[in-house]
Every structure is written in structure tokens, then in C-alpha cells.
Length: 328
Image 1 (cartoon, rainbow, N blue to C red):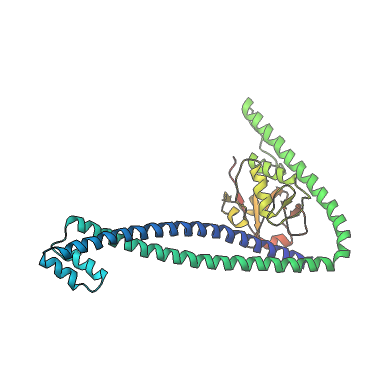
Image 2 (image 1 turned 90 degrees about the vertical axis):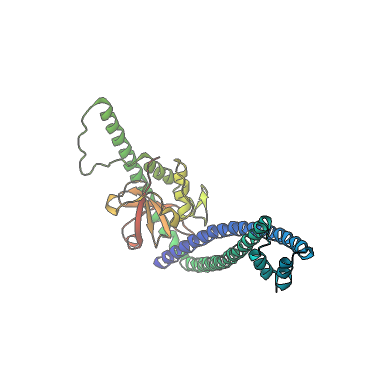
């Protein structure tokens, strides 16, 4: 089972990388569209200014000004012509403005072209990363399915025992959250009537912010829901999808990525964890919601269901930290 766990965690990490690359690719594509639009505009403006310059050259060429004729006939190229006109005494203020526009638009065309080239290179790189992540996902799903098939006979007995254990842990977690809610209500009542609250004993559960406990309770309602890659709604969840959905039900918006979710809220030490805190594992590639008493709820991996797990043992060695979101 340790091998299956390793595969599933590796799969979850690859999935999160795939989603992150997809989001990055969408941004690059928006940038590409904007760069193409700016480049079209700059090229159009440059052509218009160049036409004005060309018309002005014809006028200068057909005039009787010897110095102007020298400017026109002595030029080796359009660029040289523009530079010569820029320096000629016969250039009018209108000419100067048009020349300045030509130089400006040429610079914009060059800059936009360079930005477009960089964006295209970034697009190719992210597409390659995305393809690699997808290939890794598909490969690991195949390995996991093969491993599951090889231990199918053992799974039935383990599932029955695990269901009983999950039921016990769920009942205990619900009781803790109810007790925490009662303590919170009593503390609020004592404050209202002016009663000095008695300091809680060491084993008293101190209520976390309501948003945290509420999100944990919502997630608990999905115990047994199948794991679905990319899932973020009842009927199927992945790890970050479960967290995003649960917090969404209490009015807190989170991204569908364990890496991005780690940027939310504030860090909290392991010995200060409260119900509703987000707990992260395996290089931030996996996330769950703390439910108290050293346990957390999560959507583990393909072939599994939303379940409660202990922070001790295997997950302790993969633990990366926790974040606490501000109460809504």
C-alpha cells in the first residue's frame, strides 16, 4: 500500500503542475493576443507615416530648393533619407513631427515584435511542460491501476476495516466540532451578560473562527465521495477541489490548486492547528482540512474517496506546513 500511496501522491503533484501550467498558458495566450494587436496597430501607423514622408519627398524633389534636392539625391536608403531630412535646415515643423512619428512607430514595431517572440517562446515552453505533466499523469494512472489489480484480493478486507475506522473518526470529529461550538456560544453568552469567563481546562476544545469550523463541517458532509481528477463539486473531488468547494460554501473563494492555496491566509505552526486550517504535504502537491485531534479530511488519490486521515505516521513525514484563513 505504501507503493500505491507514493504513486497517488506523485500523481497529485503532477496534476497540480498540469493545472498550474494550464493557467499560465491561458495568461500567455492573452498576452499574445494583446501583443499581436499592438503590433498590427504599430505597423499600420508606421506605414501611414512612411506614406506621408514619401509624399513629402516628392514635394521636396520637385521644388527648386537646391539644399533639399541634395538631401533627396544623396540618400542611400529610406533610413538614410529620414536621417538626412531630420538634419536638413529646410525641414518644416510638420516634417519634424512626421519624422518623429516614424521613429516612434518603428521603435514600437521592433519592441512589440520582440515581446511577441518572447511570448511565443514562453508558450512553447509551457505547452511542453503541460504535455510532460499530462504524460506523467497518464503513465502513473496506468501504474496505479496495474498495482490495484495485483492486490485486488486484499482490498475487500481492508475496505471493510477502513470503513469502520472512518465511521469512528467521523463521529469523533463531529462531536469535537459540536463541543467547540457549544463552548464558543457559552463564551459569547458570558460576555453579553457580563460574567467573567473561567479559563478553560487543558482538555477544553477552544473554538476556531467560525469560517474555519464551518468549512471543515462542510467537507465532512462529503465523506465517501469518490476522488475525481479535477473534480470540485459533490459527486467527485480532487484534493484542492474539495478544499476550494468546502470554503466556497462558507463564502471564501480559493483557487483550484494546492500550490496557489498555500499562498492564502497566514502560516500556523503544527502545535497550534485548529479545525478548518489547511494542511499541506508532499512539496505542496497535496492539501487537506484539519478537523482536530491530529486528524484531517482530504481527497487522497485516484481510486479512493474523501476520508479522514491522521497527521501521524506516513503523512507526518510528508508534512510541509499549514495555513489559517481569516474568518469571513
